[in-house]
Amino acid sequence: MAPGFSVAVSPFSLNSNDEIKQSASTLAWDLMQYYKGNLSGQTPGILPGPPPAGPYYWWEAGAMWGTLIDYWAWTGDPSYNDDIMQAMQWQVGPNDAYMPPNVTASLGNDDQGFWGMSAMSAAEMIFPNPPSDKPQWLALAQAVFNTQASPDRHDKTCGGGLRWQIPFANNGYNYKASIANGCFLNLGARLYRYTGNSTFSDWVNKTWNWMESVGFLNNETYAIYDGANVDDNCTDINKAEFSYNNGVFALGAAYMYNATKDQVWEDRVTKLVDYGLKTFFPDGIAVEIACENAGTCTTDMITYKGFLHRWYSYITLLAPFTAQTINPVLKTSATAAIKQCTGGTNGRQCGFKWASGKYDGQTGAGQEMSVLAAVSSQLAHVAAKAPATAESGGISKGNANAGSGADDFQLNVHPVTVGDKVGASVVTLLILGGAGAVFGFMTISK
Image 1 (spheres, rainbow, N blue to C red):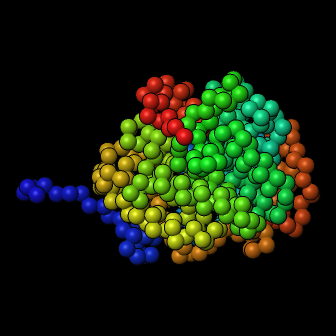
Image 2 (cartoon, rainbow, N blue to C red):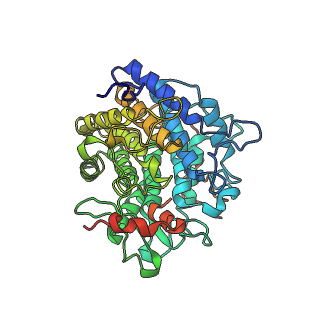
Image 3 (tube, one colour):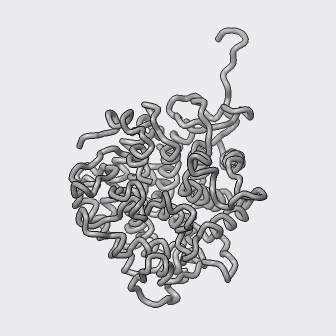
């Protein structure tokens, strides 16, 4: 090496549990520097945006709070619990179903679903309950599910399934998206495991079968494609593959396996995980294959690898037969993730291209959130804290009819009992006008 030159060294380490906790603590702090909702005059719960007000859509903040709930559960650090509580209560909307009117213009089923999954995480990880006069975590998750189970959301086009957007006037309403249906299936599987209510498992099975029948989930390879337009009855499927689609379905399948011990679900978990590790962790390091190497990932897409790490970590607890396969890969990937966190004025900002081994010059909430997820989830198997249920220590109170006013819909389920105590990527690119640069390499054949 020539005199006067040095290689930037990351301050983060995974060498011990204490060093993982310290690294996660610093990453969480750096992530929260992008959040302004706890400052005077700002809106609690959201990251700066949506465009043009800032780069972040509403859903990404919902995902961030879920990441920080996991951070708290795995590290024991309550530093951001007050922010989490304020944010997730502020954004519930008038019907407590995470449909606030001020985000209607970009409100997708997946956006609502991410907030619902974060609320479900709060229930499962026994996050402190909100005040008794506020909507409870389990009830919020039920409200999201109930509104999404509405017949108005599951029309007959393409034989069923959820559309990407909720309001019919929104760009993307004519697109049926795997991520929207994945969030719905994921939430349903978790609610079924938590409450034991078979209404949820019925919807999970119906959604899985629809995904296979429409061809979004390839039942031979277990690839999951982005979605298709209803105008051609979903026959022209966009075969771009994103890591969070694999992750959200694999985790949903793991919850179903854990609840049922059914061989069918064990096989589905195995096939999705095997495909996901092979496809999204080349050389053992997470890569967003549809856009990363070409440099065309949007702000949304920069977050997906972090979800994959978090959700695969949960899978090892829910379906322990996967741990020996998953854990070494997640460690290799997390090690690569922290190695490139050498940027910014503080010398520790994280980029997106983990596999490159060096900081790529681009910083943001998504980059920090993803590396935080990769690092903190290294403690999942140490804490060995599998998600709780109503029967295994869950303390959150439910409401089987929650959200019924949001879509003038009420899910036909049993009254609350003790057992209840408990953005589609490609279309975004189209809307932003960037599809021409990416479809050539994103379309993946069977």
